[in-house]
Amino acid sequence: MNGSRHPGFIRAGRRLALCFALLSLLWLLCACSSAKKAEPSDAATLPAGIFPDGTSEVMVPDTDAPTTEPATDAPTDPPATETPAPTEPAGPPVWQTDPGSVTDLDAELPGFDYSPYLPVPEDVSRGDASLSYLYTHGGISRAGGDKTVALSFVLVGENGLTGQLLDILQEKQVPATFLITLRNYLNSSPADAAETVRRIVREGHLVSAHGYTFTHTSLATNRRFLNELVLYQAELDNLLRYHYPVSVFSAPYAAVCERDVYLCDLTGFRFLSYSCLLSDAENEAPVYMVLPKLKEALSPGCIIQLRITESTVKATADFIEYAQQQGYQFVLPVHVPE
Image 1 (cartoon, rainbow, N blue to C red):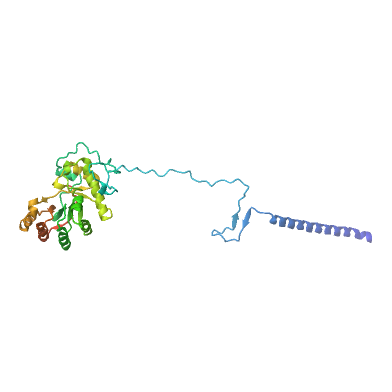
Image 2 (image 1 turned 135 degrees about the vertical axis):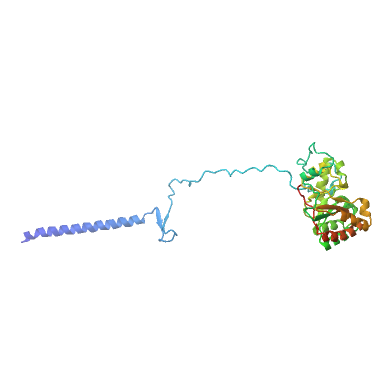
């Protein structure tokens, strides 16, 4: 009987051994899995949904691996642009030094570049400029279109009448051009001459260079004429305490020299001519003689040039009313190509 049970015990023992082996293998697998989780990983994880695109993996770079720079486009040259062609001076030449320090108007102004303006071409003469030459170089000899008239007044010295004239122009809301010989006017006029110039600008009138000094420009050297323009601009800027680009030039002695017209155009000035110019005797004549002269000169686009005298101031008030009754508008002179 004992012998018949022996095979069963053997089979039971084998089963127990197999179960033990399986349990041992399972334990070993669990131990290896735990050890693997404890090792550092190349990838760390964060809870899903922390990034907008839904990924939950943040890659940790391998510090031992060779690094490579991200690919970038090869540097390119800046886009090619056309180099603008050199242009002539676009405005009146500006000189920053105090013009009062200049005693020799024929000498070179220290620090001023003459090369854009001088020398003057040989074919530019000192003779009278034709009307076509004047227009070609930006000159002005008309006030504008039809039914327009421009008043201009010469200021070389102050006789106490400019304020009265400005009052009339302000009352009638009429602009005018003041042809000021700046150094002469400031040096030979009362202490308030500078304030008069400021008032002229403040009330909307046009300051026209009538020479820095009262010089017959056709007799001046090329450098002297250019210096007159440069010094005028510097003096006026000092007086007004800001940059006032003088855009118009009218020559003393009513000269219209071809060289002057050429240099004015090159430096940004408009050379101003006139339609009606009263003589010294006519400016001093009684009002009843001055007013008919002005009425006779009235025509579309005319520019009338006057000296400031008692007669011209009184005649101006009457002439403004007369011209406006005829349908004329008072304007500042402008360049009108012909």
